[in-house]
Amino acid sequence: MAKTHSEADLEMESPRLRLRHWRPDDRASFAAINAEPEVQRYLAPITREGSDAMLDRIEAHFAAHGWGYWALEERRSGALIGLCGMMHVPFEAFFTPAIEIGWRLSSAWQGKGLAREAAQTVLDDAFGRLRLDRVVSFTVAANTASWGLMERLGMRRIGDFDNPGLPEGHPLRHNVAYEILAP
Image (spheres, one colour):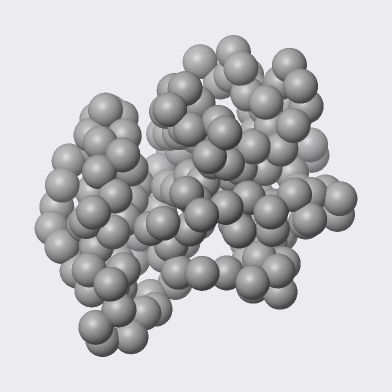
C-alpha cells in the first residue's frame, strides 16, 4: 500500500521506490534515460530539448492538478530510474476524455518488477485519494512487456487506435488501449 504525505509535499513510497516531484537536477538524467536504445524501442525518438519540454508539460500538469508523472527514484540508492504517474490524455480517441497511467524505466532497472510496483502505487492513489472512476493506458501493439504489465495490473484491453501524435505510416502509430475501473 502506498504511503502518502501531506498535500503540500505529496510523495509516495513503495517498498523499493519513491515517487517524488521532479527537481532541476533530474533533467540531464531523464534525458539520458530517454536516449537509451531499449527505452526508445517503442517510443518516438526524443532529443534533450524534447525531454526538457516533456518535463515542462509534466510540471504544468502538476501545477494544474496536483498530480502527474512522478520522478521514480530507487529508495536504496537514491537513483532516478524513470517516471510513473498519470496525466490527462491530450488528444481525442475512442476512450477519451481519460486519465492515462504511464511508466518509463531505465533499461538497467527493467525486468525487476519495479514498473508494476510503481504503477500499483499510482493506481492505489488514483482510486483512493483522487477517487477516480477509471484509468486508461496505451502502448504500441508490439510492446508486449508494457501491455503485459497492464494486464497484470488488472486492466482490460478495450481496443486499438492510431495515435494522432504520429504521422500516417509511422511504425509506432498503431496502439492498443486498456482500462481499469475503480473497485
